[in-house]
Image (cartoon, rainbow, N blue to C red; front, side, top):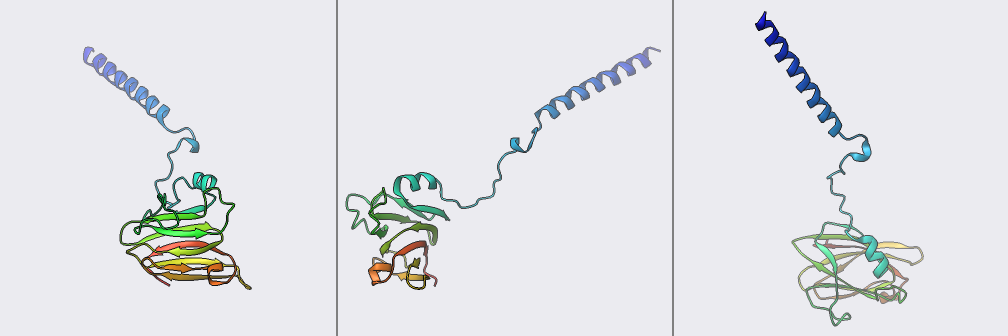
Amino acid sequence: MQTSSWKTAIVGGAAVVLASTAAVVISQLPSSAEDTPPSIVEDYSYPGAAQVLAQRGIKLIKGDGHITLVDCGSRPNNPPEDLILVQSNDLTLPGGSNFCFKPTGASGLLTMEIPKVYFVRGDNTNTLAAKVEVKDDPTVVEVEEVTPLEWQPVGVGQERGDATILELRYPFTS
């Protein structure tokens, strides 16, 4: 009879331990979709894009991280040669009219919207593809090739309508 009591006590104790463990596990599970962690899928959105829009007046949409907005330095009209320069004649932009980008790596992509662009200067290494929307009649989207350190006119720089730059990419592909 004692063996039977032992077995009953062991089985009963095990049941209590299992029940309390299950209660702890269940209490630690997310209670709703709001508690689930965010997806780890990269969407390539530009980090700090809202802050850039507020401070500089330009939209940086997405990219691969190899073309980043940087300060143009002490000579914003003629920044260091390792930077890409985009010039706008929109004097209402809160961040001024010169925007510099640092290319890194063998290839890069950045989609953006900078209004009233009239020049793009390439860096000293890469041949760029600059996709622009030109407000001609009719409006057209075209890709300009910008060779290293070349000052490529776009939009009013080509005596055409206003141009909005939509994308910088290297190496050049049309």
